[in-house]
Image (cartoon, rainbow, N blue to C red; front, side, top):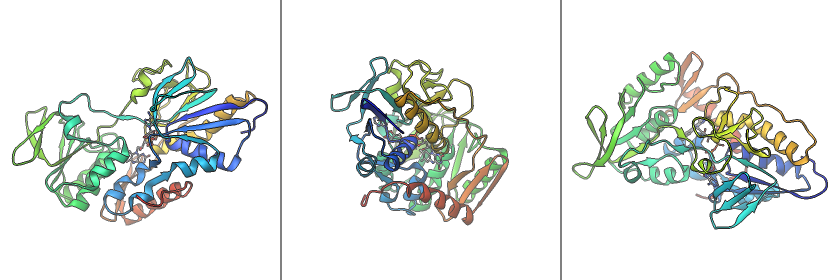
Length: 373
Ligand SMILES: Cc1cc2nc3c(=O)[nH]c(=O)nc-3n(C[C@H](O)[C@H](O)[C@H](O)COP(=O)(O)OP(=O)(O)OC[C@H]3O[C@@H](n4cnc5c(N)ncnc54)[C@H](O)[C@@H]3O)c2cc1C
């Protein structure tokens, strides 16, 4: 980023993947003429790719925590840790959690998504939501003895069920609304997941949805399913996939049909030039298919870096992001192996876990890590 003349303010809402990479870029480029403010909800950003491995005992918590004060310092940015409470796109300002207001010239939103729970009774009180990840990590590291129930058998749910079961050795079950585990993967990946889960003794209740979580018997809770069956649990993890972050609904910028911030392929808001969104919170109006996965968020970063700079300087043409047509999904199985799925191919083994470990460590090596939990 090159800047001349007056100092402009760039506000980065949320320390998601693209913003971490933007800050790492700033640490190298150190542009002048721009004041950068990163708004986070605390001093660390947890990397989801290593969360299940940490819960399986493969990594200490510090290994997956980016040290935000150190990263901001290196990038010459100011860190505001009280979170963003509101975004007013038309007024170009952000309300911080501590009540202060920040005006901006250019802003980028990368606050991720919220867990979907469809207002199921009992979820708030009795389930562990995956977001924020820091809360999930704290609660799931101290798993109670007794049955574990994971609601949602997408990639995150299956990986967590395998990793938590490997560590805690408790009866484990998955509930999935779709017809099988990994409903969005290929038929071969679904068959592989079914085999691995069966071998590990993890029950899959497919074609079922949870109607309510409620107090049960003998000190346990229970999930009441749509079919009327009940499943007892000591711990319930709610992994039903993403929904729009609550910050978006009231921000005044255009949203897509699902409620995500509507962006062009340039990642810029369709209604408010100078406002960008990346990662899970962006909704592409061009119709290109961009799954809500870290792999895609990471690939958006170079386009975001270029286009934010272009808006700050007013001198360059915006670039377009083109999502890759597929990606290698790697799920840690918690037992020294991983499951891999790429288009119609699927396999399991130790080599795949080594590959996943290498990819994840390489990503984290780009940022300063917290030295303790
Ligand atoms: C258990 C699990 C495992 C996963 N594994 C993989 C994987 O292996 N590969 C893969 O591609 N994808 C994986 N995903 C999906 C992946 O985590 C998300 O798609 C990815 O994190 C999205 O990145 P992001 O940049 O949109 O936001 P996030 O990584 O979610 O980061 C957003 C940040 O913004 C912060 N924030 C939220 N609200 C505010 C606010 N009001 N003010 C300030 N900050 C705020 C959040 O605390 C968070 O730190 C996994 C998800 C889970 C839950």
